[in-house]
Image 1 (cartoon, rainbow, N blue to C red):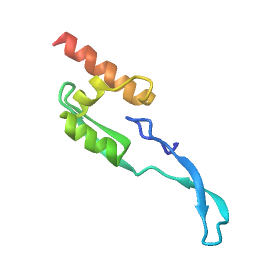
Image 2: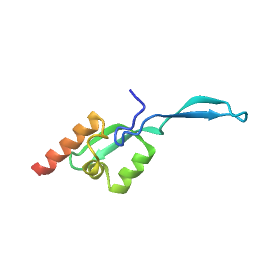
Image 3: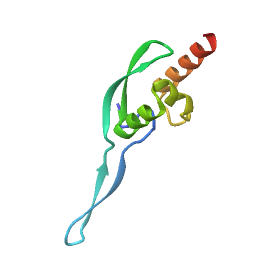
Image 4: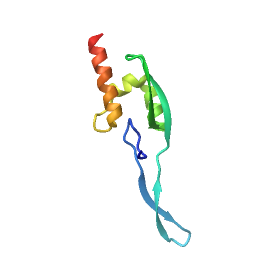
Length: 95
């Protein structure tokens, strides 16, 4: 599985290590990913997602997984998160 946040699309960035002698070597900046279980109130089900720490704070700030996915752009979401978003939308219309 790639090192990419399933909710925000945040991934690996590249840059340089710069020594005291100003030698430059390539390096990678990895995102702070965590395996988190989030609960959907609409579906009454929990989902395990690999998300960044900043995305977890955003989910808490917006009021849960359902509210976060409602505002999230489809092109940033992973295929799994996109399926969860569509299932939540279907359940909300049916209720």
